[in-house]
Every structure is written in structure tokens, then in C-alpha cells.
Image (cartoon, rainbow, N blue to C red):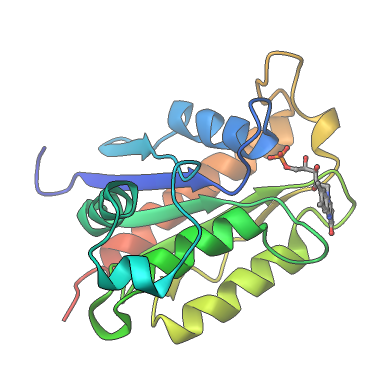
Length: 189
Ligand SMILES: Cc1cc2nc3c(=O)[nH]c(=O)nc-3n(C[C@H](O)[C@H](O)[C@H](O)COP(=O)(O)O)c2cc1C
């Protein structure tokens, strides 16, 4: 890759096979700006956070997740909303990634937050809950533009392809902004 190239690592906060959030990540992979790559990871094989496990050495799925975040210029999270907050599986993954606090892979990491939900607010509340976490981890979550996808069942087709042209356009703008944001703030001290 050239000096201007940028690598994004993304995860979905939903584990289900037909997840709209995973579908949003797939749509993102089709719409990347020039010079930008997107690798999608998994969080379904992480154990439940247990500080005894961590103290004994990160289990391999945790170590893999940390390596993937560490190696990325930007970390992209597609989150559903569960009971007005983020899903437990995503919280679990981020709790693992947040240790040890002072040197964790989330520290000063440029982060993009987007999400699909079946409700009208399109993950507004879960995105805010995520932002709150990133205060403690000293992560650089991009503020604007926001990408919230309400009524997700209406904007993807049966194959999970994002068919809504207005949202595709906003996704493209969001990805360009995330790449610019990562280049602007991504020099870790
Ligand atoms: C336990 C649970 C709680 C939910 N709570 C909310 C909610 O607070 N707000 C909302 O908009 N949708 C809520 N939903 C609906 C999800 O947004 C919807 O199922 C979404 O499609 C899940 O994301 P996915 O398609 O990526 O799996 C909830 C779903 C579940 C299973």
C-alpha cells in the first residue's frame, strides 16, 4: 500500500446470519473511497469478559481482535440498538479491547459509528451509548456525519443488499469523512 492508503477494520454488533448491521458493513466494503480497504472481523467467538481469564493471558480470539484493531487506521462499528443501548455482545468485545486501559488498542484510535435498527430512531441511542464508552477509552470517535439507518427492513433486499439510494449515498459520504478523520487525528502519541 502507498503512504496515502488507509485500512479500516470493522465489526458488527449483531451476530445473526441475516444481520442488517453486517449487511451495512458489506455495503460499506463496496463503496470505499480510493486507497481505502475494509476488513470485517468477528466477535462471536469471544468468551464473556472475565478478568481472571485476562490475567491468565488473552484468549486467542481476544488477542486476534486486539491485533486487528491495533493494525487498523480506523475502527468501524455497525451497531444495532438493544433496549435503548448497545447489544451485550458488542459491549463484551469492547470491554476486552479496552484492557489494559492506558495502553489499550482503542486509545486514540479513530472510530466510525454507524448502525441499523428496525425502529424509527435508527440506533440514535445506542450510538450515544457507544460514544460514552469512548470517552473513557480516550478514543477518537468521529462526531459528524452520523449514519443512522431506521426501519432497516425496508432498505435492504432479501439478499441483504442495501438498495436505498439515499442511504447508499450517505454511506459513501460517511466513509469518505471517516477516511479524512482518520488521516487528521490518527497520529498516535
Ligand atoms: C433484545 C432486543 C432489543 C431491541 N431493542 C431495540 C431498541 O431499543 N431500539 C430499536 O430501534 N430496535 C431495537 N431492537 C430491534 C433491532 O434494532 C433489530 O432487531 C435489528 O434489526 C437488529 O440488528 P441486526 O439486523 O443487525 O441483527 C431490539 C431487538 C432485540 C433483539
